[in-house]
Image (spheres, rainbow, N blue to C red):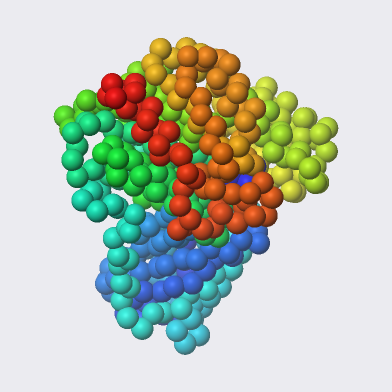
Length: 434
């Protein structure tokens, strides 16, 4: 499952060694890229001051923005910086030729290269989001946890008369609050557009970067200590925070993809006023992962996939992983997978005693209509809506694999027709009596 490939890269600690420069020479803004395992990611590094020197790094396509670098070492021909993230240090060693800093690095046994070019002028902050509708506002809202703050964005309609807020929970892997994954070379902005669509209909929403992603980068814990309950606990924390907010009378949890499973786990603890599953899995995660890995044209055999899945499901560490599967089943990620495999989405949804909406696109190539039907069979009182032509990133798309995937890289492509109406209609009927 590609969503696990980038997890190591996203959660890495980054150490930059810039050779041959004094502190004054290094200060400024630098743009470039890192390349690892055939993946190239743009990076932005800004150094300020001279003594002491400080700096930040951004990896826009992974949702990482202005994460603080720490000066580790500065000797005659070397400057080192570290971005502290538990258990995944990456060391960069470079030299300067003119206005270019380039070199190599090693992280978790993988090697790569990096190159940075100094900008002529200071970096200019990007303009405000074009997706905040007219007469609506967006404000920062943070959740405090034991390991750091999880950063969110609260989008508010101009008139908050409906006093309803939707907590939007993103899917698996390094997916940020806007629905963009570090796995992909471009954005889709699906969850940002979802928030904007709700705001236009008078409904507030809160979306957030998961711990270890984007502006919540520093809240990450050791990857080997992660479990699905870690992320579900964050959903519960956000639900409680929004329930305590006097601006709202109703809190609805909307989980997209794996976010649906996280929302279901948290709902049993926090009792939101309603729950919406959007492209959520109905099968056990191991079964869903198996179907994705063994789809037509797969290079893997059912025997090797079943062996690995069986061992991880039993909680046994698998040491020998075929090269093409290391990104999915790396040892640090296996405890998280074990915890995910132990959860039944159908059992969880069957226990809900609140209004439920199940939404699924019939052109989704990652989660199928089989999953939504399983959820509906387990919770027959739920409303069930199939959105014609909608794919996994909530966009209109053909079933052709290449054309479907192309929409993952189109940030301005509108959401699938009928999606916003299905959500607002459900809220109106069940929450507002409309």
